[in-house]
Amino acid sequence: MIPTTFEYTKATTVADAIAALGNGDGKILAGGHSLVPALKLRLNQPERLVDISQIAELRAIREENGGLVIGAAATHNDIATNPLVRSKLPMFAESAGQIGDVQVRNRGTIGGSLAHADPAADWSAVVLAAGATIAVQGPKGARKIAASDFFTGIFMTALAEDEIITAIHVPVVAGARATYQKFAQPASRFALVGCAAQRTPDGQVHIAFTGLSDTPHRDHAAEAAVSGKPLDAAAIAAAAAAAGEGVSINVDHYASEKYRKHLAKVYLKRALEAIA
Amino acid sequence: MHLEYREFLGTLGSNSNSVYMGNKIHVKVNGKDHQHEVEPRLLLVHYLRDTLRLTGTHIGCDTSGCGACTVHMDGQAVKSCTVLAVQADGASITTIEGMANGQLHPLQEGFHQMHGLQCGFCTPGMIMTAADLLSRNSNPSEGEIRHALEGNICRCTGYHNIVKSVQYAAEKINKEVAP
Ligand SMILES: Cc1cc2nc3c(=O)[nH]c(=O)nc-3n(C[C@H](O)[C@H](O)[C@H](O)COP(=O)(O)OP(=O)(O)OC[C@H]3O[C@@H](n4cnc5c(N)ncnc54)[C@H](O)[C@@H]3O)c2cc1C
Ligand code: FES
Ligand code: FES
Image (cartoon, rainbow over all chains, first blue to last red; front, side, top):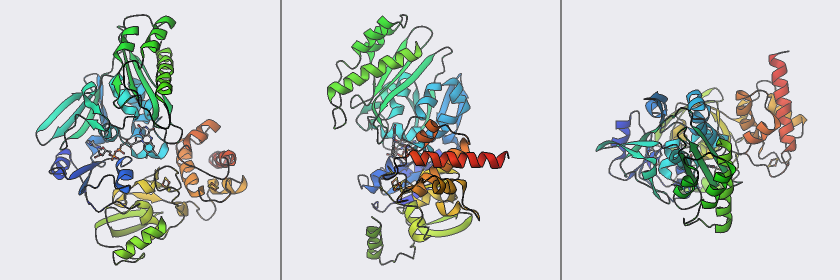
């Protein structure tokens, strides 16, 4: 499978990359593990690719204001093995280590995954449950988008065509417990259903699902069933009963609506038990 | 797939041994420097197989799923069917041809001794992925070996002997380090 022709530029700074993107016919290339397969199938035929993988500041992972800032071009493997992430945001390391396979984790990036917005991607549920903010930059300047406002539909986000994700800002809450649990599609390892849950010491619980419907989302009904309460068997059962109700559930040849909803309840239960 | 690519090159008035104008890349492959002008759309696996004639790297699926095309890029296992040659500019690549160093690499010896292959099509990719694992974890458990090889598909062996081959290599490497 041979992609159509395109030009290729390697950007060395973010400003460079934004300028090279131009007026809509250019496309960012990060790890290429969603884009290159799409180019090969000719689902995507951009005129120009702007490679951001060599921009050092986009690959960095650092502390800022008590939280962590993960560069958009950090690979899944960078994140899974980073000592800061492992100690301060173990859910991020845990979920990064479950993406695809070693080769995919060595190339694919968190920013690429968020921008691509595959409805079964792992990072979406994780950034939602962590209450992360997505920093983006374009010709009109920089702005920050709350994860809860970022995903707008199947492969759709709040990112404008001429904007680049530069970093993911994640708050670190002392004493918070969080986990990501997924039922992986056995061949691709994408989430058939993935559930991320975070409980802060004030008793507030965030619950987010990926793979369950067109758009990754927080499940506010399930959150209400456990927030502010001890995480005991009764509360967990109530949250599982509420999970996945009232959302339009994905149906494909891997899983029916009934089975996906069942998985949502099972994986939410496992997630809550893991952080109880 | 490969034939189609040759035919495709032919339609561009080129032949399989020539590379045509495009972006200049400089890569080190198995320790040897190479400089070529390549079209941005050229995949790394085609660069290795067709331009450099290193045909040990195989194409099993061309859809990023099977791992037969796995090579090391700056020491990390990558699927070369999902990397553009231009992305490898400045990188150091190791293919299966670069593994033996006068004698077989412990992994190659392991696959030989433990019958880790039948048709052998998946083997170069298996070895490159296993080498990535052993470079990070020289004493992996069976579970860790199976987890590390999730991106590599074999349609012959049933994987048991592949796991044994990697264990053989790990043992040999550990003995060499601490005799
Ligand atoms: C075999 C296989 C298995 C996989 N399994 C999983 C899995 O289990 N779970 C999972 O979540 N994912 C999985 N993936 C997808 C993988 O995680 C991709 O790497 C990821 O979705 C895209 O990241 P990338 O860096 O490769 O992006 P690219 O492919 O380079 O880009 C993807 C899209 O995002 C845009 N983009 C990239 N970076 C930015 C940026 N910083 N700002 C704005 N736009 C940007 C590009 O223009 C493009 O449209 C799998 C992929 C493969 C090939
Ligand atoms: S040929 Fe590259 S993964 Fe199958
Ligand atoms: S030995 Fe035949 S595919 Fe693995």
